[in-house]
Every structure is written in C-alpha cells, then in structure tokens.
Amino acid sequence: MTTKVLIADDHALVRDGLRHILASASGFEVAGEASDAPSTLALVRSTQAHVLVLDLSMPGRSGLELLRQIKEELPALRILVLTMHAEQQYAARAFKAGASGYLTKESASAELVAAVTKVASGGAYVSLAMAERFAQSLTEPADTLPHQRLSDREFDVFRRLCAGESINQIAESLCVSAKTVSTYKARVLEKMQMPHEAALVRYAVKHELFDDESDDV
View 1 (tube, rainbow, N blue to C red):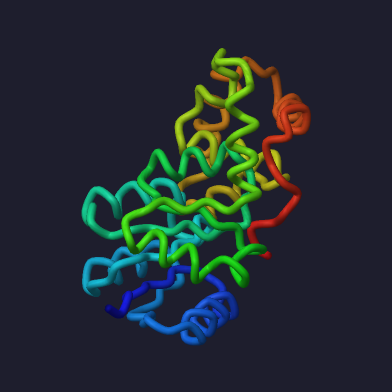
View 2 (tube, rainbow, N blue to C red):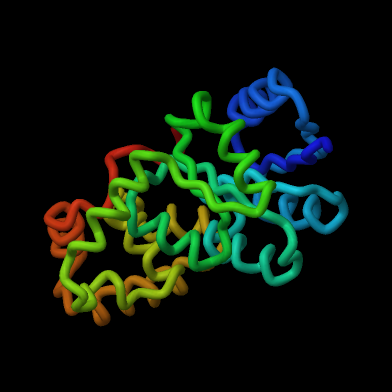
C-alpha cells in the first residue's frame, strides 16, 4: 500500500528535501504541500492522506495550537512533527497535543523514512537522541517546575522571549496584536514568579530548556 504524505513547512527548500527523500524510497506519495498555518488547515481538510509531516514554526499560528486543532478535526490523520526544537519539554507538549512522532530537522535525512513508516503503521516515533532526553527526564523530581505551569501559547511566548524576539516580532509571527503578546508575557512572568524578562532568560539557561537554534534555520 502506498502511504500518502502531506508536507507542511514554510521553507521551500525543506519541502523539496523532504519530498526528495520520500521519492527516493518506495511506497510513498507526497499528496500535497503547505507553507503556513491557514494553507495547512486547508490542505488537510481537502486532501486525504495517512501522515502529515508538520513543522511547528510556520507563520500564521502557534504550532502546538495548529497541531491540536488538526487532531480535533481529523483524529485519524497521523502527525509527524518535524522541527528545529530539540528540547524535551517541547516534544512532550507536541505529543500531548496529538503528535504521533517527533523528529528534529537535523535528523530528518537519516530518519524520515523510518519515522513516517512507523507513524503510518499506528506506532509512535521519537529519535534516539530525544528518547534519551525523555529517559533522563524520568529521573527528575516530580514537583512541578515554574515553566510547566504555562499553557502551550504561554510556553511559546516564553520561548520566543528567551530567543530575543521583541513583542512586535512575536505578535507578527503569531498573527496577534502586540497588546495580546504583552498580556501573555505578563501571565508568563506571573505564573513563573519572575520579576522581569532577564530573569526568564536566566531561568531558561539554568534549566537548559531551549537550544540556540533559530526558528528561521
């Protein structure tokens, strides 16, 4: 049986690379592509497929929110997250939102075919490096850490603030107003009991929450 795959990523070169990898292996058909959140929703609603390869950092909407909506509308569609984010916390939120697999872009060339195959067959896929991070997290204290109190959207804003993005840049990326982002920032500071943005950055560094990779890579 041919596995029909949809690809959603805002970088044309990435989509081309993924399509080439799947075309080089037997048993796969790329049935459609999308470059942002609205076109991804339109694609999954109009095109039948087995697996969606989804980038979490596309313009138009928070990736985790998009993932959750797609699973609510199309629960049978299997979703393989492909992202620059190698952080265990981000992967855990993706699986809670409905992902069936989590693969970093740096691992895609070597693991994409195996990941899509596993996810399409009903299994869950996580790279070896990420599996090791999950295993390590099981030995951590069970007490809830401040960042674990955040909602998915608050966590996304927290990550972007720590990456040095301004309020206006975050607003543009998430397609919301600067006032809305400021509200989210205030909630993050309140929930994490931090006095200012610099304290958030120090906290993220101390807990090794985020890689230094840029979303635009």
